[in-house]
Amino acid sequence: MTINLSYSNLVNVVFIAAGLGICGLSIMQIGAGMHIRKEAKKYLQLFLTLINIYISMHFIRMLLEGHTGTAFAIAIRAVTFVEFLVSGFMIFMLSLLILYITQPGKYSKPIFYVFLALVGIHTLGLILNLFTNFYYHFDEFNVYQRGRGYVMSNIMHILMLLQNMFLLIKYKTKVNKKLASALWLYLLSPLAAIGAQILFQEIQFVILATVISAAYLYYVIVRIQLERYSEQQKEKERLDTELTMATRIQAETLPNIFPAFPERDDFNIYASMNPAKEVGGDFYDFFLIDDTHLGLVMADVSGKGIPAALFMMVSKILIQNIAMMGNSPAEVLQYVNNQLCTNNPEEMFVTVWYGCLDLETGVLEAANAGHEYPILKNADGSFELFKDKHGFVIGGMEGVKYKQYEMQMQPGSKLFIYTDGVPEATNASNEMFGTERLVHALRMAENKTPKQILEQVDSIVKDFVKDAPQFDDLTMLCIEYMGQKGRE
Image (cartoon, rainbow, N blue to C red; front, side, top):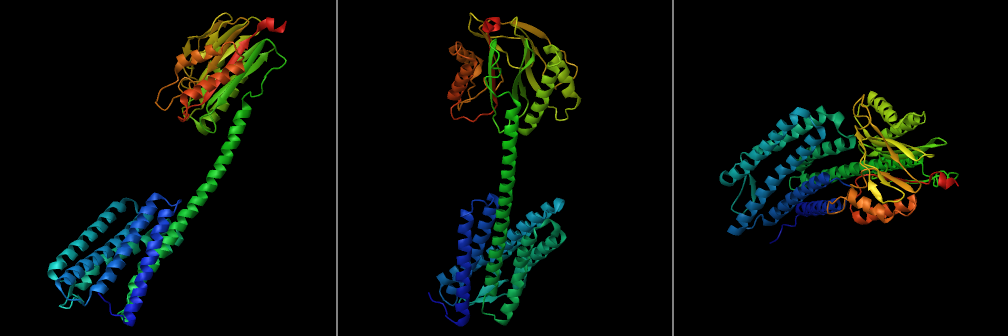
C-alpha cells in the first residue's frame, strides 16, 4: 500500500502525525494527572480519543484511496463511515461540555435531547448513505467523491455549532474567561481552516485546526482544574490551622494540669479526653465550689466537630457558673437547660452528669440528664454500675425538672464517669466494647491511682478497637476520695 508523496500529501501527513502525537501525549498526561477531577479526566480522554480516531481514519482513507479491488473498496467505505460518524460525536462531546458549563437551568434537558436527536439523525443519515451515496461515494478507482447532498452531511454540525455559540453568548457570565476563549477557538477555528482549504484544496487545514484548538482547550481545562486544586489546598491549610488553634483552645478550657490540686490530700482526681475529630463535643470539668465542696461534670454534646465544640463551650461555662453560686445539682441542670432552650435554633442538646461532693462527709449529691451511668467502687468493694435516675437531655425541652440523688463515698472509694464513646467504641467486626467490658477493665485496675486506671482503660479500649476508626470522643474522669483520713 503506497501513498502519493505530493507536496500537499506530505503536508497532510505531517499534520496528521502531529495531531496523533499531540492527542496521544495529552491522553497520557490526563491519565497521570493526580489533581484533575475524575469527571474532567473521563471527558478529556474520550474527547481526545475521538479526535485521534477521526485523524487516524482520515489517514487510513488517504492510504486506501486510489487502490482498486473489492477488499480496498470495503475497507475505504468502512473507514470513511467511521471518520464521518466520529466527527459528529466530536461536536456532540463539545456541545455537552458547553451545556454543562453554561447551565441554562430548565432548558438543559430539552437542549440535551435536541443534541442527542441531531446525533441520531446524523448517524442514520450516514447509514442511509451506504445505500444511496447521497453524501459521498467512491468511484471505480476508490477515489472519494462528494455526493449531491454533501452539504446535508454538515447540517448537524452547523446546528450544534449555532446552539453552542448561542449558549456561550447567552450565559457568558457563568463561563470562566479563559475557558470561554478556548471554546470559541474550537468553535471558530474550523471555519478559518475551511477558508484556507478553499485556497489550498488538497491540504487538510481542518485537521490542524481541530488538533490545535482541542489541545488548547485541554490545556485550559487542566489549568483551571489545577488552579482550583491549588485554591482548595490553600483553603484546606487555612482550615487546618484554624482547627489546630480550636483544638488547642478547647484543650486549654478543660482542666488538664495534674495533679490538679497539689495542696489537697483528701481526694485524687484525673481526667482525659480524646476527640474523634480535631475538636470534640465531649467535655469534663471539676472545680472547687468552696473549700469543702467539689463540682464534677461529665457531658456529651450531640454531633461532632466545630458546632459541637461551640455548644460544648457554652454549656460548660453555664454549668460551672451556676454551680459556683451554690445551687444543687438538680437546680444547676434545670437552669442550664432553660438557658440553652431559649436560643437553640440548631436544636442541639447535651447529656450531662453533674455531682457535688462534700469533701468532709463524702456525700455526693448528683443529677443525671440522659447521661451514662456512673461506676462506683466502695472502699471495701469492686467497681459496680450505679443505675441512677435519668432525666431528659439538656437543651431538648424547656421547663424539665431533674431528680437529685445521693451517693455515700468512704475513704478509699472511687468514682468513674465517662461518655458513651467508651462503651460504644467499635472494632473492625462492628462489635461494641460495651459496659460489661468497661466494668471488668476497671476492676482489673481498681487498686491503682485514678491516672493509672484511666490509662489502663484507654489501653484496653484501644487494644479492643485496634485499627478500626474512632467514631466518637473518648472522655473519662476518675476520682478517689480519701476524706479526712487523707488529711491526717
